[in-house]
Image 1: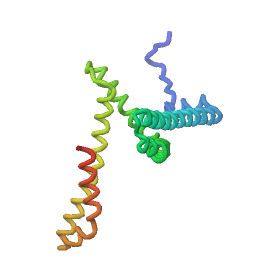
Image 2: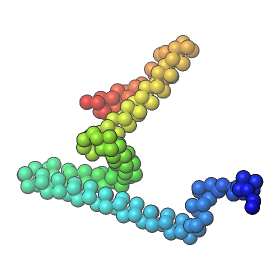
Image 3: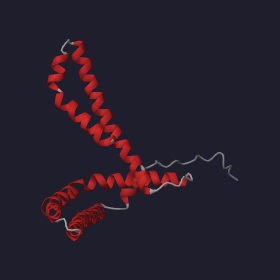
Image 4: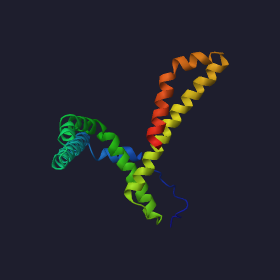
Amino acid sequence: MENDLDTPIMEYPKKSIFKRFFKGMGIGTLVAGGGILYILFSILQFAFTAIVGLGMIGWTINLFSKGSIIFGLLVLLIGTPLAIGFSYYLFLFLLILIIFSAIIWGIARIFGLTISFASAGDFVWTIIRVLILGGMAFVGIAGFVEAIREKRALYFFKEYWLGILFFCFLFWLFFH
């Protein structure tokens, strides 16, 4: 009788999880899956843009019913095309914002915190605002330190006066 300890253990080479995953799929499945995802994304983008446009038309009808003809016409003729255009191009950013909000909301719910989805979205938006303003402040301070080292502080304010005003405007806009 042969001892189990004396027999050599045959080791199989380990395959990457990606190789095992893609081996069973094939290129056709990946192309079809990508096409389906693109179609779903396009439908969502169209639906979002249509909802924004219909919301603006609803706002126009509300203004007309209250007797504000001039503001109703402004919203209808200027606001509606702007809102539709911006919603089409901001859809991807807003979708990513919603996904991050859903992740934070889900994590909070798992740990027993009862927060609303809107407050999770506000939290994500606050983080984005702080990152934008923090990056602008970091670049501005680095440029100012460099200008002081080179003894060209006046040149810094001549060169970056518009950026400083834009930073102050965003700071006011984001945290007002």
